[in-house]
Length: 430
Image: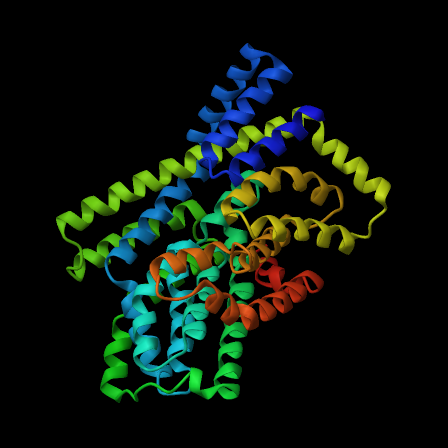
């Protein structure tokens, strides 16, 4: 147990010190396994684990969805989505912020990254909101909060990695994320609407769009709508697996971008290089997480935690809230990917032993890390937004985020106490 505990503290310390997560997980895991099993057995386990992962069919889902997201991002899908949403919502009070939230949700469905969504939307939506007189706090907070949808609305990189780590069906995780994702979008839009009513000076109306402008704007988003239906509909109807859906999505995105003449040779090269770099980075991190999970198992730390939980005699809900509290605290100072990779191998044995559904737990964990992304003192989305918008003060962003954090907590409680919200669509798949 002691070796596992020291390894956990070492990984957390290295993560806080901003050591690349892949190096932290791989280095600590290799050293820890060497201490427990000996150098020869440790290196044999390392090579076997990495080889099995590289040839894993399920792992192919990661680079394919990354490629799809990069194709659509590079070819202007974010601007098309914002133009379409703004055409229908821009004329109402708070309409530009509402359009921003809808665009964040749509962009998340093809991007899968909260930080990338926040960074992209800061360039697309913030200038328009400032042009019409929106306050700094509402404009920036809408983007920061909307960006959190990127790790929940499928296809989500975090959900993919959670599924690989826990051997949970990725297709079911994607389908399970739909209702909580739409619930988050609805709550965020309600928060914006209430702010617009209570403080109308912060959220003025935009311009009215003509019928021709609305029609023209909608025409630009048909590839995105068709792609989302293809992926989620195909998985839900069991026409293809998540990996096959990723291949279909990437191929469709490439065909559409070439058909619409949106991708040059230079774009093609940049897209594939960026996809390769991102995939290799995630693979290295994932290999480290797999080895870390083995270290936790061999050290006996998981069994010791189970014994402690049994002795504490906690109720199921007390146990879940204790775990979520750990995720929330760590999420304030760490990236969501790091939290999932470090903490999931630690807590999954407890979750399984208490009979919780792994699909439900995965969605709940992602929602709590969403909250952490915008929670002081170090909400990662806030600092990404600050880097993109240096003229906006950190305190203004956090001030504007208070209503969004409040509705996020409400959503989390609903998902915890009513698991059917998460599992409703999944149950129809079975």
